[in-house]
Structures are given as C-alpha cells and as structure tokens.
Amino acid sequence: MSKFLNKIVNGNALEILKTIPSKTFNLVFADPPYNLQIGKKLKRPDNSKVNGVNDKWDQFKSFKDYDNFCKEWLNECKRVLKDNGSIWVIGTYHNIFRIGYHIQNVGYWMLNDVIWKKNNPMPNFKGTRFTNAHETLIWASKSKKSKYTFNYQSLKCLNDDLQMRSDWTFPICNGKERLKKNGKKVHSTQKPEALLHRIILSTTNKDDVILDPFLGTGTTAVVAKKLGRKYFGIEKDKKYFKAADERINKTKAIEESYLDTLENNKSKPRVPFGSLVELGIIKPGTNIFDQKKKINAKIMVDGSIKHKESAGSIHKVAAKIMGTESYNGWTYWYCNVGGSMVPIDNLRQRFLSKNI
Image (cartoon, rainbow, N blue to C red; front, top):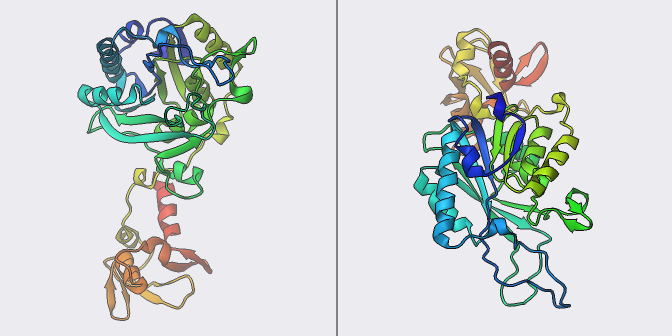
C-alpha cells in the first residue's frame, strides 16, 4: 500500500492502474483528455496564435477509440476505488456527455453535476458561437449503496452559512500559480488550486488517499498535500511529470492543528431528548423556557414536555408555539444550569463529548 502513498509516476495510466490493488483509494479526481479534435490553428483578430489545446495527448483517431479509452480507465478507477469512495471527472462540452454516459454504464451512481463558471474565460475570437465560459464536473459514488463522504457543514461554512450550490465561480489558472517556462504555459489546461481545494475538502477527510490518473502539472497532489490528504498521481508526459514533481516538492502542508473541519450532524450519534431524562442529566419536573423567558414548559417522566394545553416532544411543542410544521426544539428551549441560562442542546453536547 505504501507504494501508492504520496507518490507520482511517469507512465501510461491504463497500464499503471492495472498494477494497483483493488479498493485502494477514497477518491478519484480525473481530468482526462478532452478530445477536442481541433483541425486548424486558432488565431486572434490580430493574427497572433492562440495557445489552446492542440497537444498530441488530446488527439484520438475516432470517437470509438475515445469511448474505448474512457470505458477502460473508468472501469479501472472503479476497481481501485474503495466501496464508499467517489469519483470526480471534469470536462468540456466536447467530452463530458460521452463520459457521463460511460460513468453510468460502468456502474457508478451519479450524485451531482457541477458547473465551474470561469469569470475570466478565453474569448471566442471568431465570433461564430457563444464564449465557452464553463466546464462541467460530474461527481459520482462507486455504487448506489456507497456511504460516500460529503462534508456538508464545512461547505456551508465556506459559503457564509448558506448551502453550497452546484454552480461554482473560479477564475482560470493565472498569475503566479500558472506554471510557465520561457514565458510559455507549461500545460494548456492547468486547473486552479481553488477548484481542487473545494473538491477535496468537500468529499474527503484528513489522511484519505486520492488518485489522479491524469495528473498533468500536479494540482491535485499539491492541494492534497496542503490539506493533509495522501495522493497518488500518474502522468504520461515527461515534461508535465517533471513540472509536477518540482511543484509538489516545493509545496508545504498546512499545519496539522489547522486541518480540523466542522463535523456533519448526520455523522454524530443520535441522542433523543428522552435519553437525557432517563440518564438523569435533566430531571422530570424541570422548567424549560424560550430565549426571552416568556414561554415555559415542564419536562415529563417520558421525555415529553407540557406547555399549557400542548404536550409532546420538545420539537412538536416548539413548532406549535412558532406556528410551523416543524422546529428544532434543541435550540428553541433553554434551562438553568448552575445559575446560567443555556440551550438544552448544551446538555446533549456535553453527553456526546463524554461518550463518543
């Protein structure tokens, strides 16, 4: 297993994937060839050359060859993915729909398609079609039964306490982050680190192992290293491999104490309010109240509460008072603890901290 931890190799992805033991990785991020099939050199209105994607690695003889290539690497990635793992694939309109078709046929389970909206896309110089201002990512679990990682709370925090949507805005890779040699881009499609930061943070945990079968100049490995994840990358092109190796070696991991993230509520053990009553943490007859201390209720021996003519769970009674179908009683009700007014949820958190 250590053979595939925090290492990158120079070689053919299809050949190397077949040497990897099954169920090795927690996550796969794949940025495969686009198969753009560009026949002519692109030029700007001033007749200067556009450095687009016209590399040999992106060229296939036919759609059939490209389809066979995609089916093969997708199958191998599925084999080396752990049962609860997931895969991200990024592409453009040239290839992402074909890949999505194969992803489903191979047996992955679709979770989301995400739009990466580029706020600084390359213009359409010919003026014959819309400017291509986005790429599409597909996120899928290994199977329908996979208990995949999704760090909902961290993403919500990242987005100012709003649910993270499936349309993401990031600039294309530019500035100091863009690798250049003699003033020219080392790689034509280098992805921004911000994009991989969100992907890795959202769908892996610390010390998880990430595979990138088309590593390019190493963005996946660089971000994985920064975020305390392990990585294994494969890159066919020697020039890209060398650039990735140098870049990864220069990368410093974020200090361990800063890698903690918010825990998902769904990953915590469920603690019914009645359990706190049974355990004597809060006693029958205790008076609980709302934040303004205007509404009071008494706790019954079975964990229900009574407020005037209303009786039921902490959630049901709170919902009736608020005039809604549902309400979180843990945050609505307060009690006195040592002379201080605290949410009853504090009692649950204390119990969890001692028993997890």
